[in-house]
Length: 224
Length: 224
Image (cartoon, rainbow over all chains, first blue to last red; front, side):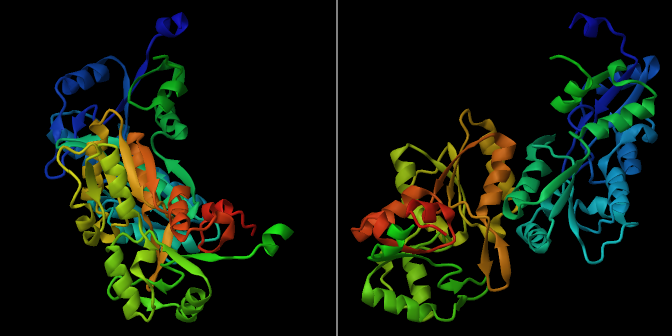
C-alpha cells in the first residue's frame, strides 16, 4: 500500500460521461463543475487519455461536443469501443446484426452486415425497443454458436434527467434467452484500458484513474 | 424408474401457450393440431388443470379465447400468475410499479399502487420500451431493498410469427442494473404448480404433465 502511495503518477486515464459531463437526451449535456479546470491542469502537468463507452456518436463528434462544453482536448486521446469492435469483427470474420444508437451505425459502415452471424450491442437508449430486442433474439436463437459483442457492459449511467439503464442489462436479457457467449469491447474490459495506457507510452503502474470501474482500479493496482 | 412408469396417472397439468395453441400479436392465435381432441379426451378420462404464464389478459378472457379456438374447458381450471401475485403483494404490504401487458393492468386494480416499493413484471411484449424499463430501473435504484416480482420467468415463447423474448430476460436486465431480489410467481415456481395440483385434490405423484418446464418435471418426479 505504501509503495502504491509513493509511486509517481505520470499519466491519467479519465472517464468521460459522469466524470467530465452528464449527458442529456435532448441537448449536448452539461459539464460537471470543476472538470474543465481539472482537465486543463492534468494536460499541462502530465499525459491524459480519455476512455468512454459512448457509442452514440463517433470520436470526432464526441470531441466536438466536449469542445462546445468548454473542454480543450485532443480527439486522438479519446478511446471509444466502436472502432475497436470493428477491428475485432473483421479479424474474426463476424458479420454483425446491430442494436446500436442511430449515431453509431455509421461507425460500422465498413463491416459486412449481410447474413449476420453475431449481434453487436451499444447504448441504443430509446432504440432498445421490444421489436429490436426480439429481432436480435431471433437471430441468436437460430445460430449454432450465438455471440453478442457489446460496446461496454455498464449497469447504468448518469444523464441530466437522472440515472439511466445502460446496455449491460439488455445484453444479459438476450444472453438469458439464448445462452449466447458475450465478448465485451470497451469498459470494463481490461484490454480496452490497456490500449489507452499503451498509447500513452506508460506502464499501468504509472497511471492515475478517474473512473468508477473496479476492473480498471484493480488493473492499475490501485487500492481503494 | 420402473416405479414411476407403473404408477397410474390420475390427473393432467397442461401448459397453454405452445401446447394448446400458438399466440399471435394481431389475432387470437391458432390451435395446435390434435390439441383440442387431446383436451377432450383428458377431460373425459381424468382431472385436468391448465397452468399458464399468460398475463396479457384475465383468466376469464383467456378461457373465452380458447373457447373461440375450439377448446371446451372450464375457466376455473386455468391457473395464471396475476391473481397469485395480487395475493402475494397484499400479504406483504407491497405497492407495485407495473410493467405488464395493457390487458393485465386491470388485474391489479385492487392493489394500492401509490408510492411504489417494488416492481411487478409480466409479459409486456411491445410495452417493454426503454422508457418503461428505465422508469422501473429508477424506482428500484432508489429503494433500499429493491424487489422485482415476476409473473413467470420464461426465456422465450412461441408466437404465430415465430419465437419471442419472454419476460425472464427483461427481469434479468433490471436485476443486473440494480442488484434487486426477484420473486417469481407463476412457472417455473414450484409453489405455482403445487397450487394447481392441490386444486385437483391429488398428490404430485399422481399427475401427468405437458409443459416444457424442468422444474415441474422434477417436482412431479418424472424422469426424461
